Each structure stands twice: as structure tokens, then as C-alpha cells.
Image (cartoon, rainbow, N blue to C red; front, top):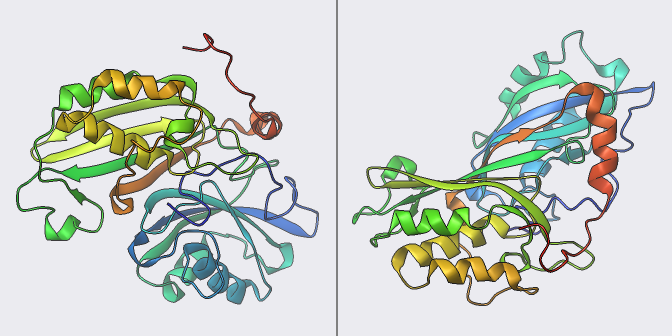
Length: 298
């Protein structure tokens, strides 16, 4: 999904914004962010490309009058949206207004219409937008209407004008819950684990609109869109529920799993522990998970 993957939250490298605790000369801020990913080349900064991170860093650096770097909870890919993205940034304490939330209004004047910083607050000690997160929540929208997506929702809803069996999709999705190696659903990244705890994966229908709700402690590259693509194949009758469940036994990316289009996907929320648990969470997230022992964990 992205240059750095919509679902890449691999706990393997230091935070871009510096240490977990800001020095006495800087203050760490939490930013809550929303964007329409249609015209962005993903979240991560890329030379010569328009990215969400690049837009916010440029405008915030102008306000602070010094270059700043953002660290994000989940780096979304090109075309993927967010209504509940979270990032942190360390800024010179001397540059802060008494109420940092005042910068929300200032940024609204400078940012383009397809990205908004909806909240700014002083982060608690040890807060790290990426490593402190305990859960990410995504939603994926599909319409089976014969005419396709409604014009006002065409940028965040995938047209799938084929009949699907929602009950079969639900059974297949539920069979994947738990701690597993999701290698079959992930694009391999060198040195990155594909073991994840899938905590929610279910579907609802309202008229012609199908919505997938997918939550996990973290996601590897292309995982959510691959989970959706596999479920849609089951829904169409091209694949069986048993096929989807059996994919958990694969240790390489499965060529039979199609990646669903990016624009149906949105990051809607990121969960964090209580303030006093942040430091412990940061340590735990950095611990690499090993391979799953056959017969273990579901």
C-alpha cells in the first residue's frame, strides 16, 4: 500500500522524532490527524512526492520557525485515508503558546483541504505515537450497488458490483482471529516479523454498503487490504472458508490472495494505554516476536 506501508508498524527502529522522553529544551506534542489519501503518495515523506507527513511538517515548521519531524502511529499507503491518525512531534518549548491547541486553527489556514490536524496537546511522559500504541482500528468500505459508489463517497468506497455471501465472508474472517503468522497476507520486509494478533475482523451490511472492521495490535505491509481481498473472494464463491483459514499455515506471501484497492481503507482510531503504562508498552513493542510454533496459539 505504501512506500512505507499502510500497515507497517514494525517495532524495529528508533522513533523518528527522537527519544521517548523529550529533553528539557523541547516539549512533545500529540497531533490528531485526518486526511483524504486520494491525492497523496502515502504518509511517509518522499522526495519529489506529495505526502501527508511532508505537508504537515512543512506547515508546522513554518509556525515553529525550525524544522520538525513527525513520528506516526501507522504509515498509510498511497490512496489510504485516515480519520483517527496520531503522530507526535518534539518542538522547542520556547516556541509553544500557553495553549498548544491554538495551533490547530493556525494550521487550518495553511494546510490543504485534504488534510487537517484536528487536535494538538502536550503528550504525557514516555508517549510515543508509534511504540506506545496498543491497537490500530481500520475500516474498509465496499458497495455492491450495480451503479457503483455514490458520487459523494466514491473516494472512500470501492465499487464491487457482484453478489457476495456476507455470511461466508463473516465465517472466513472470524476464523483468522487470534495470534498467528500472517505471512500469506503480508508483503515481506527484510527483518520484519509477520506475527500479529488479529483482535477483530467482521463485516456489516447497510443496504448495498459492506463495511469491514479490522483491529490488531499492529499490521504488516498490505495486511488489511489482503484480508479484505481474501474475504471478498470467499464472498463471491471463488474460494472457500477453509481456503482462507488454511492460509494461516503459509510462511510466504500467497499469490492467490488479491490485494483490495487502497481507497476503500481508512485508519479510524489508535488506542494507547494509561499514562503510567506508556514506558512499559514502549519496551514491549520493541521486542521482536519470534515465529509461531506449530500447534501453538490457535
